[in-house]
Image 1 (tube, helix red, strand yellow):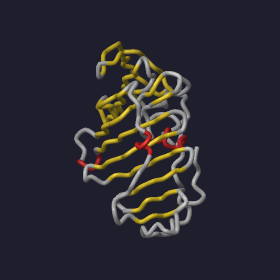
Image 2 (spheres, helix red, strand yellow):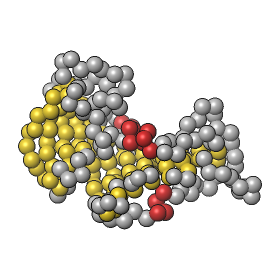
Image 3 (cartoon, helix red, strand yellow):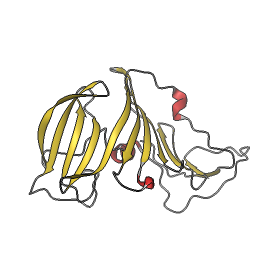
Length: 220
């Protein structure tokens, strides 16, 4: 992350794994965020396929490697000879608010109205001061069909979390089901106060990628 008020930061490389699950349930998520309006995340599956989302004040784009297609709001010059395709009806480009909702660690979704939070203790995580917290869903909590609003996974009522004291983000979240760890999202590397090159928020797709211009894409 970066913010003009307190320097330039980056948070990268989150590993997500379901214990005992098949390999396709594990993936890595790289995130770069320069406040207020530059975002990129690369989501890579175990087979190497990657989805890239970029949001800047001037453009939004999404690359889907399995489709070999780049969806973009950029104006395409007539001299651009890359193969063109029309986006499917209803194609929607990423926005910053949506990416923040999709990435679960920056804005924890455990409001006190829905969750009873109990501190377990202080610890160091990746060399950073952190708190371990147990979150249990309150009995009167109204469940939503959208887990992005409260909690992380449908049907999970207990989480064990590690919270970075300085950044106030989650460094690890483990879902507890029947007293057993069911899934974990954990940060593997945190980079703070290091400049993020502007080129990070550019993207040149591999040769042969089809380009689809999405004129109605939002750029927040």
